[in-house]
Amino acid sequence: MTNKKLEERVVIGIFWEESERDWGTSPDGMSLHKTMYDYEQYVNDYWARQPERVPDCYSRPVIAGNIFKANVTKELYKAIEKSENSIRLYNGTTNKLLDKKEIMIK
Image 1 (cartoon, helix red, strand yellow):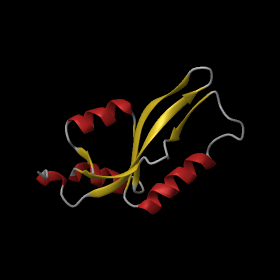
Image 2 (cartoon, rainbow, N blue to C red):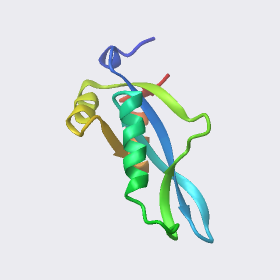
Image 3 (cartoon, rainbow, N blue to C red):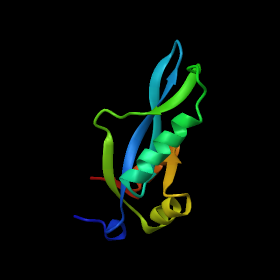
Image 4 (cartoon, rainbow, N blue to C red):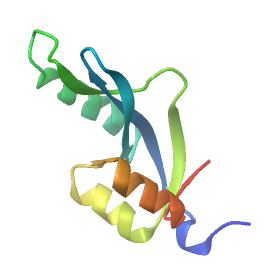
């Protein structure tokens, strides 16, 4: 059954992970984007801001098969539009929005 408050607001999402030297990786939330182009721009801009040397701790998108489409609430969609069509949500926020079904991954 479709949640009425999520209809017609489809976005592109990607999960992120944190990588820490000598520790490993752990989940680090997700980013949501209005279009695939916005997703590509967001990731390219993110990497362009990173130092040339690999830092001890950094986040990275989990690319392999993890780009997804999701329905979102009107409020979340407006937040995405307001922020140059991409937003980053860290673990606590990601989990809360998924639990409350304000993000429904297709």
